Image 1: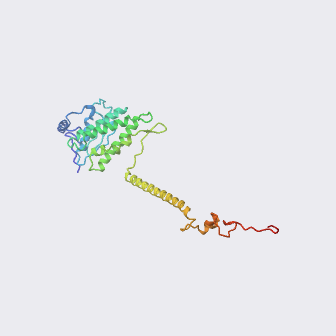
Image 2 (image 1 turned 90 degrees about the horizontal axis):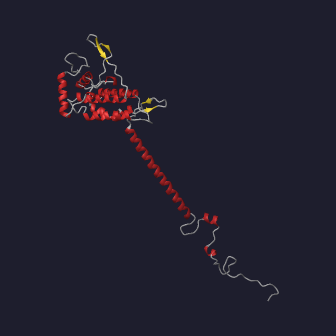
Image 3 (image 1 turned 180 degrees about the vertical axis):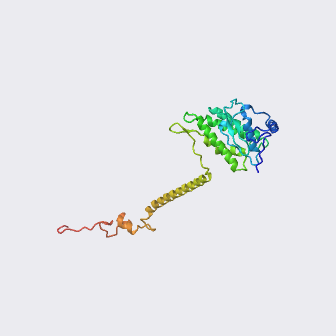
Length: 304
């Protein structure tokens, strides 16, 4: 059973934190951090109450709070109208509705920063669940995202509002599914949600959020290993080809002679081989033109 703390007067989720619990939270916060958050760093009391009740559930949750609902306590905008609230088992009641649009990028940053700071304060009972340091890191990431430009263009406010909607929905859904993780672990892992804030304008000038990259680190490592093995075997094949070519060149110089130095039969036919003694002019005693002896003379008839 989900035991959600209720306020003293009503069971509405948007009621402020009960006064005794609020005093305890403020005392624990001041004792731990030695300072108090200002009104611009805290959301209004009704939103604080919802966030505190989400934290106090048997399994903590994070509600999807769009930018229009992230109103700091310093905001003095007055309600613009009423709406009918219909809750099971309760009478229909009117609720004040505040139309509080976000028109500037820096205003959105202030609201998101107030959300992170408020989340850290209302969960001070378990400081490790969402530490102040994570709230500051996440706030800095949002400020960096809204300050980045692409080819001189700044992200439009509507693009940033959609980015926050995607981000807060991711926080809420991950907290609901992965019940063992804390808000600090989910929000502090910036690379899981920062891609929604990367501004890439299309050719028409409209902002387009890049598609989230799939977490396939293991596949990338395996592909890199395979590419390395392929390159290794290519190098081995090249070395083998070079060695074979050198062996053929050396073999061509020795293939025309036998081990005793004499040319092979094929070489003798193609090269018109002449014996070594004949090449040096050392013929026999009765050698002819090819020998080294003197030629025979034949006397003519009538000569003496």
